[in-house]
Image 1 (cartoon, rainbow, N blue to C red):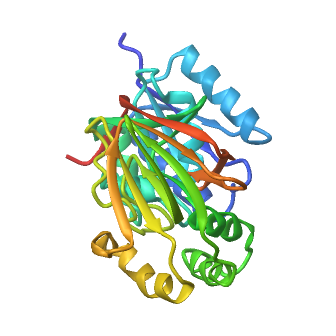
Image 2 (cartoon, one colour):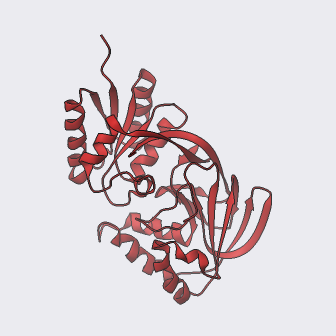
Image 3 (cartoon, helix red, strand yellow):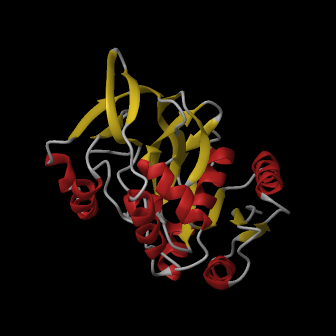
Length: 294
């Protein structure tokens, strides 16, 4: 008898209510109707959840399903990268920039759940920073400060947190002396932010690295040079369309290997804290397969 296909369903141990719980139920109902075996994976904290997820992959599962936002996708990527097990994403929560970049339905959990069983495998690059993998954008400078503040805010909910956090950090804006290495090219400049994108979106739909392609073997780098807060404030709305890259204070680059250094600056990726600078980022081609619409 042919064994039933199986998936480990990763859910956030801190988000077992609200949209995460509802969307997990939608996914589990679909899997039951499709004749799949599904095992919920949720540990006592992120480290425990990651360990349990790796155990399930080692024991053999056909798909790793993540029900959650970019933070949980980030955790799932630590387990699935390079394993050969495809990743399915059922978005829940607010950001969902990884799903946005790959065309995974963000407001239709039933449609996203169907991709677990019927999606098309797409080989996708990942970025690696030390022993950490990320799928969207690494932010350093002003945008990392905004992410840290937004993560600390309990109100408002959703993408509005980033708007509030942005205005708070604009009041504290200062030039940051960055040193960059982009493959063999070296730069030293005062910048407001440096973003390194495997995909193009961060901050709930801001197209910060509009030239990023998730399967081309390169990283897209966006540098916003130092500018007064009022000028940056007028430029920020253009981040949603990606048209900010035509601004004279914005530079864009492409590289396979990126090094960043600046005093007292730290980095976030997929909305999660990565480390203080300096750090190095490498593009790893086709590090994961993601189940996406045809």
